[in-house]
Image (cartoon, rainbow, N blue to C red; front, side):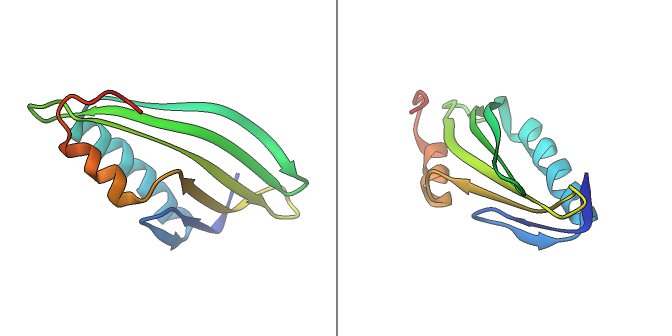
Length: 114
């Protein structure tokens, strides 16, 4: 499904290589269970926006494992580019807010998603 030299980028990470790609998603799952009492990844839509591009829209929402139960919420979309063999060679995630704005949500007491 992925090329060996897949390129990944989001607002805080960028790297190349299938092994690194696997590691980042394993790390995300590990930290989600460690730092959140509740975490959801809602996939809204997946569509082919061009012959060689697949786009997925999504939302991340959860409750941080802190006494004040801070909530996190942000939307984004993933753009996957396909090579001539139909393998994904690039995955770019775009978020609807800056990482610092998302981090600020961790310090708000019991705020609901917005």
